[in-house]
Image 1 (tube, rainbow, N blue to C red):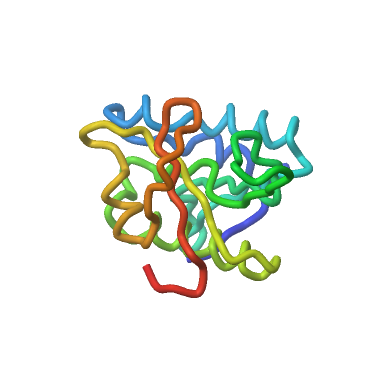
Image 2: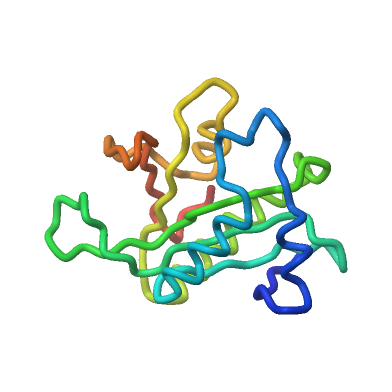
Length: 155
């Protein structure tokens, strides 16, 4: 497994990544993420997830973004913004790989916490993130649960 930058050579493979129909309300489509990556280029870190030469997913991290709802004025946060694993590729460890890759990137940039948000509903990704070491902060962002993981700890 590996991550790759989105380029003119692979952006169509990124756009082709789509989650299961029952998950469509949990994560924005890749096309919206790429538009946001363009608009928020200073903070966005979009990557295609490959297994060999096959694109199996898409992730986008946010790096050192000012956190408006923070209790500490001027706080910046980094974390996983989007995670789309192709419907046919789910359950094979690609999501875990993606989260660990984002956490490694954040830690390499000198940060000690990674954040993520998830939709709090049955069938949502809460259990997935909890198994990877994220814990709810008690905050909400756009109606979603905010989770944090201390880096350096195994998930």
